Image: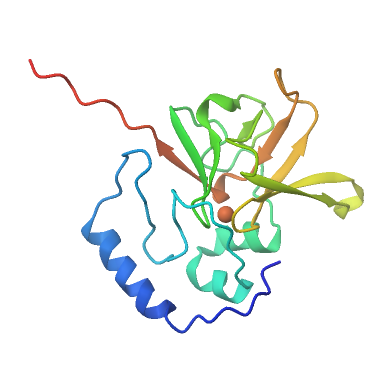
Length: 185
Ligand code: FE
């Protein structure tokens, strides 16, 4: 995917600008606020507008591990990712584009070694494709915004959906939920 021929002439300047902004401004945890990532001008946690970018563009802005999984359909080894047993209240975004994918309350301890969820944050958070690689027939899960590979979904999850979205930690970014400020004493 991602063979669109969009002009990228403005990208280096934009990258520099966003890098500066990201350094000057610590990421906020205010819900709904646009949150960017240094060095990746396409990352936006409040934008779900589809992106159609060629791999050559992604290669310039993603960490090699994220690129390998998202654009080359790689898989991290079980029990090695940062989020397989991660707990916390918040949201999980696509590490490539920032699209919101899962809420923490849909995460469950599957024991499979990869972060697992029983439903997506909304319809359209992800899209699906048939994957017949490695002698199996599986349902691949792709980011609904950037089309990056995230993992697979299986039918052995818990109620209420019975689904197990088996994701790679490296292509997820956890954003803790903002907490209310302490009341004045
Ligand atoms: Fe994405």
